[in-house]
Amino acid sequence: MRRRLAAFFYDSWMLVAIWILTTMVIIAARDGGEVGGLLYQLVLYVEWMVFYVYFWCFRGQTLGMQVWKIRCVDLNGRTLNIRQGITRFVLATLTLIPFGFGFFWMLFHKEHITVYDDMSLSRIVYLGKNPYLSEQNTKPEPEATS
Image 1 (tube, rainbow, N blue to C red):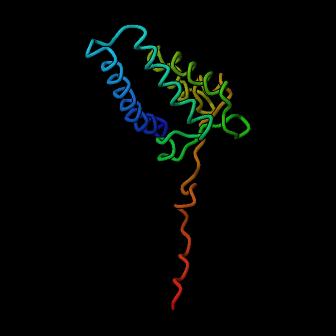
Image 2 (image 1 turned 90 degrees about the horizontal axis):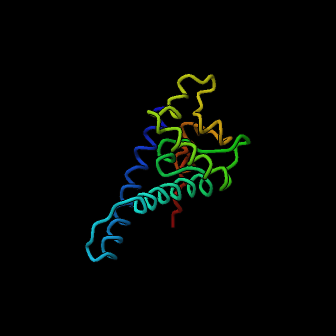
Image 3 (image 1 turned 120 degrees about the vertical axis):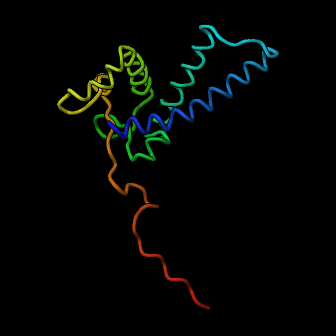
């Protein structure tokens, strides 16, 4: 649970940066006019969804998930398809509305999965201590002498 929250916090910084850029573009397009309203919120929501669906479906993990060594996979351990990614995202946002119920459900579930993990047939898995090649303790190649 801590890894998921930490990854989400890490990713939220990137999302805020994206939203700031989007807002600046909209303000510039309106010659400095105010931004707001349902359409503006919908644009930000779609950006949020595209961010997660892209990373879950094409990379398997967001940058925050990479840092915390977790990955989003389907029940067979493969990267999600786009339909699963969109389903997971929409269910996650809907089930989080009532006080984070969809996320905190993992505290009571025997497999420690969220409501949206279960409903989208996906899981977050821990990759272990050294999942990336660059982190492996390998012996350096000896330097060639001339």
